[in-house]
Image (tube, rainbow, N blue to C red):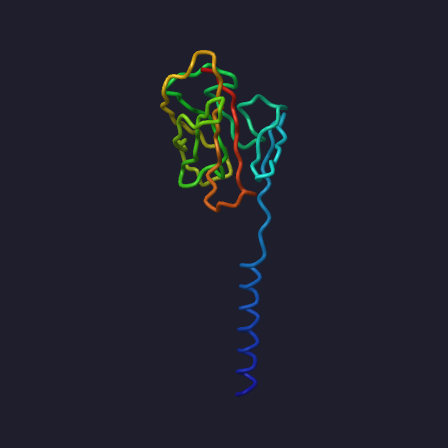
Length: 166
C-alpha cells in the first residue's frame, strides 16, 4: 500500500513540475512574414520603437500601414485615419492615436478601431478620427499611432510617427 502512495506522490510531483515549467518558461513569439521592402526599426532610450526611413513614413516594419493620411500630407479637422495593422497592435480592438503640433503639444487624441477580428496575427483594417482646433497655416505636426500596450512594459511599446502639415 505504501508503494502505491509513493508512486502516486511521485506522479503528482512530476505533474506539478510540468505545470510550473509550462507557466514559467516564455514561449517564443510566432514568426510573421515580412513585406518585400521591410522597414527597420529603432528603439529609443525609453524603449519606444519607431520606423526608419527605408519605407514611406506611413509604414512600420510589417506591423502597421497607414493609408490616410500619407506622410507630409496637409491635414484639417476632423482628421480621418485609416489603414491596416497586425492584430497584435490592438487591445480590445482599439489602439491610441494622437496629433501633436511642432511644439510637441497634444492637440487631439483618440482611438483607432479595428474593423474586424483583431485576435489574429494577420493585418486588420482600422479607422478613426481626430478633431482639433485650426492650426496656423503652414505649421507642422506629427500624427502618432501607438500600439495598445496593456502591460505598460516600455519594451513592448511601439509607435509610428507620421509628419503632417496644417
